[in-house]
Image (cartoon, rainbow, N blue to C red; front, side, top):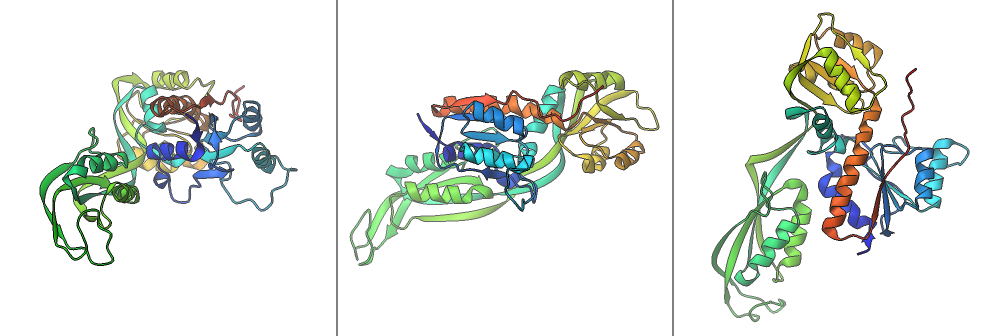
Length: 373
């Protein structure tokens, strides 16, 4: 069936919500509109002139990228400069651009987890906590004949997810009582006549970030003019998120063998290594943070990592890292291009689940500005 841009992005945000991005990170829609039919989607790490040319040639309607194309405000939109000319070309060809940046780093089954999977790093946990999401409980009172409909609607809105379980709920039956006044338009009963109905109390839990969607689903599914429901904050349940990952190799590797593994896994011609003053012979515990994660290296030290993998390490920061006793590997920023194949696989999974009539592409061009000689 045809697919609207907003429909796809709503599905995308269920997996990779914008609120998970770090403060100030300009994620979301950057260029164009989502209020249109989308037939061709492409995933890219960056938005560069070669990517824009590729998108135009492939007649792309929606471009999903890891790196936001407008990271800082622009003062002029002229076509004499490379950066702003790209924006004009995208607008001219009606190509919408949507960016997911640090939220893709933080989400479970996101970029840092894919790095660990590629490097055979197991038993992982996040490197540094970024978000705590409190759980809440909803109790809604509904006629027994509508209880199943209500449970399904709440589950569809994201309520009832507990660990590896979905659509969890609890129901207890009882009697509801009410008297409509003259202005009421009751589904059941008549004005000024006391009424009682066999009702179900349906209870579900949900993350506080989904409260608006859950309440909207409740109101849409409820037959009453004035639904009765309660919301409670749960102090015993919360969901925690973090950036970066730290975990263990199944077996120790020599430092040089592990460096060779990183090069092979990410198809690198070369990389930078910061060796500690006291030589580290083997690697067992691995910390990783895609992109520019040098500021998190003290957390890797605190997690007792033997090696920390991150990009764009600054010269003077490398001096400080050298004193920690931990090996640091800088494979560059471009290893994040792994997101292209992984996200395309997810997009195709959603396409099959939803029955969308849409073509999915991965950008074929390299946007890595560095070469090794």
